[in-house]
Each structure stands twice: as C-alpha cells, then as structure tokens.
Length: 144
Image (cartoon, rainbow, N blue to C red; front, side, top):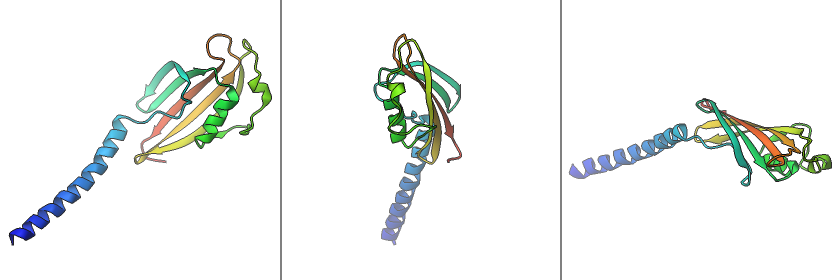
C-alpha cells in the first residue's frame, strides 16, 4: 500500500511539473513579449508604446534599403510591390532626398500568442543613417 501512495505522489508531481512548465512559459510570454524582427546593425532612434503589446520603433541603419527589404523577406514577411532582387534605384538613393521604398509585414508566433508587425522602409536620409524604417508591432493575445 505505501508504495502505491509513493507512485501516485510521483505521478501527481510529474503532472504538476508538466502543467506548471506550460503555465510558466505562457506567463513569461505575457510579461516579456519578444521584439519584432529588426536587422542586427539597426539602431533605435525613437520608441513609442501606444498600449501594452502595441509599440512602434523608428530605426536607422547604413545598410541599403534593399538589404533591409531582404531581411524582412527572410523573416517570412511580405513586401508590397518589390522582390528579393529589389530595385537599383533604392540602392543608389541620394542622401538628402528621402524616398519611400516599400512596406513589409508579417506575423511571428511565440508561446501560444503571435505578433503582427509592419515595417515602413525609406532611403536617402541626409543626417544620420541613410536608411530608416518605422516598425510597428501588435501582440495578438488571442493567437493568430
């Protein structure tokens, strides 16, 4: 009889550990949602939180606009009216003549949640980084 209680206790402990680990992962994701994808060399210029899980960053980089587009395509994003080959006119955008390049968007899953992100990419800025992108993120607490 005592060995049956020990076995039952071990099974209960295993079940509690499994359920607990799942709950801890979800709670961690709620407290610390991941950042949306951004190239490693991009620097944050400005950040604004509109609501919990609804954020916007302005990034700057000296990487070409086409390389930034390729980065977002590699993250599973879709970019409006532009291909992975990009267009030469954006790589040669003159400094001091900012121009809109494209908008890329995607959805990334984490834990039981997802986040929708959208990047508005521009090139040809005169001061600071020549390529800039505004990155918006909304955490989808109900999942995809």
